[in-house]
Length: 312
Image (cartoon, rainbow, N blue to C red; front, side, top):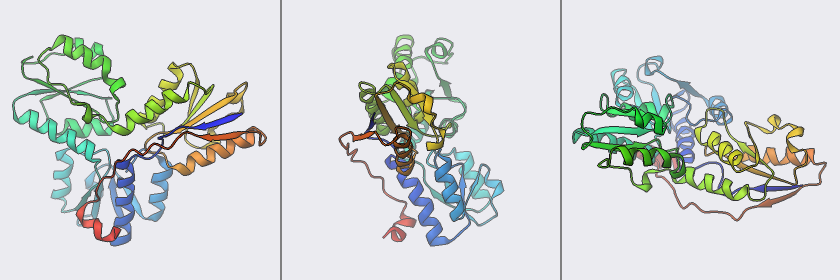
């Protein structure tokens, strides 16, 4: 059996930055350090940070006055920031810069009198944060059917933004429906789409050309991990999402000559290594591991000023 590792896979620059922010804050200020929502959607990462002294909360009211609160990579609404200010909390922003860019665009469109269409998944924490930047001016759509049912005040003053963890492929049908129904809509530029999401999906498309089975390492709440499973399955592979090597079932591998392995943007590489070890064990050691050529995504996001000294 061949085990082929996708590239790129795993942590993106935004996730790397968010985790480093929590670790440096713990090092510089000492525990407890409070984090609004899971810093990234991966319980292994969250549990490790919790052991170091991070405390994950949803409501700033659960943080003692004057304590340090970090906003997660998914971003927050202005209302959450205001709640933290009222509680006189010290804050550090770990929001992914790509998410911040969408927040800025949504707020600008609202100031200019536009209604905004947000393409995203209802209930996702990033979507909730983005909608909070244009309250009363933003409509959430997930599908072309949602576009057909959309009612707006002025089709001439309509703009669109997207959840960053959706790829160009994910949004194509909805974008087409929006353009067809509202020809004057201002659609987002391609650089608004998360580079990491698109790159990992492209890597899976290449993977399924040779893999009979595809394993995606990622959490159930990870939007981009679940999408990788869908893409592999639609391409004809037997696709499964696993949180850890313990989730792998021997029957998944029956008759498979090649198993592809990838990971969502919030899954650490150590979990991928454990999955490979588990596959080798199930193959009785008769497995050849092949790594795809390394793809350098060339993206690094700067740390907040308050933590740059600690990083040095």
